[in-house]
Image (cartoon, rainbow, N blue to C red; front, side, top):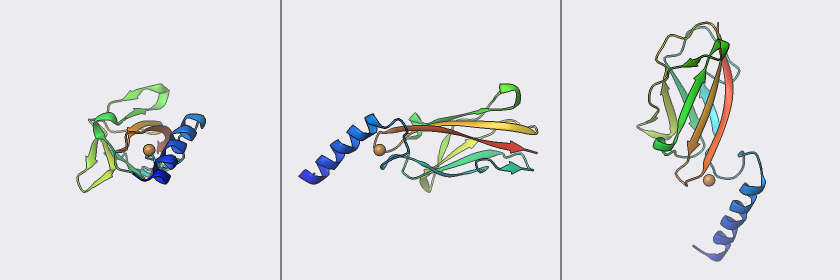
Length: 124
Ligand SMILES: [Cu+2]
């Protein structure tokens, strides 16, 4: 690694420690997802998909789904799209009832950095 790159890397590590949000630099940011954040869907999804800006380490990545009345909704083991390691697939193991849902995700990207976040969607 050349000197500029290593200095940039150190600066990045330093700033990451300083910033409280993880929405910076080359970590895995959530780019889009299905159902989309704040979307109202009419058909209960059979799986959630989350697309990130970087490849993921699936073993260290996971999602919880919380439904109406703060009930935990069972989800299957998360997996990566076989053709795209930036897409996390989360099987939903029961038919989602109408209501609001919260998705809490945490991932480790291939560079070893952790990010996490949450969003909501609702089922009509
Ligand atoms: Cu990173």
